Amino acid sequence: MPRRNPDRDDVPPLDLERARRGVQRVQQWGDGEWAVRTIPGGASTKTYRCPGCNQEIPPGTPHVVAWPSDGRGDESDRRHWHAGCWRARERRR
Image (cartoon, rainbow, N blue to C red):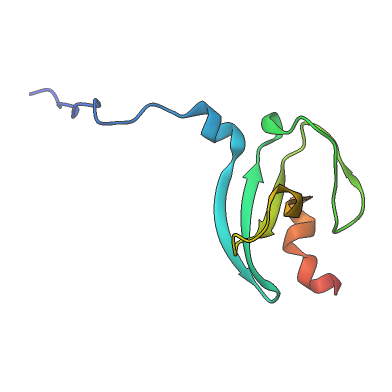
């Protein structure tokens, strides 16, 4: 008897806009809680300056965006970091 696959009607369609924005999570660090979003290379269209190394993050480069998760800030509180700089930032103090 052939194997029957379950219906796949209950799978929601892929949200391409959400995939372009990246995945957001909250991280706890020594200096507080941060909302962190991973930005895929294809979604990066501008040049940013990484506060960890003070170097440019060119368009098309995967990176992270972080801002305080307390909800009191606005878009101007967002900082774009190289992923490695973000992970190593507590060692640089």
